[in-house]
Image 1 (cartoon, one colour):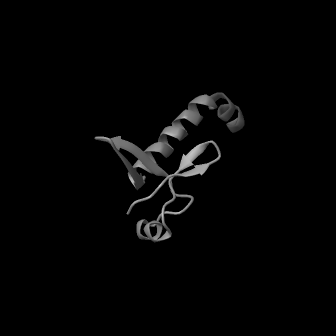
Image 2: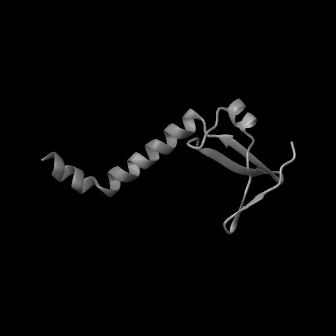
Image 3: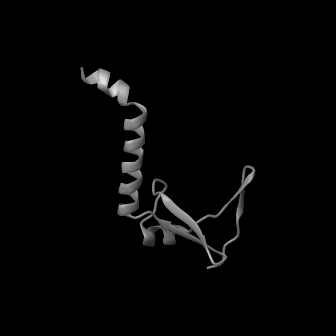
Length: 75
């Protein structure tokens, strides 16, 4: 499949055909991992393991940042 980029404000966007979205079970809420490998752009939905890892990292960051507030709330 050959696609062209489309202008989106000051940026360029890649429009993914509906058929491909359905086949990959991707919608506007799906988080995607975008990477480069040997001059190619790779786009893939993040795995459950990646999602869980990102969630745990975010929870750790929040707990560290607001530890004192959480402690006061629990008293």
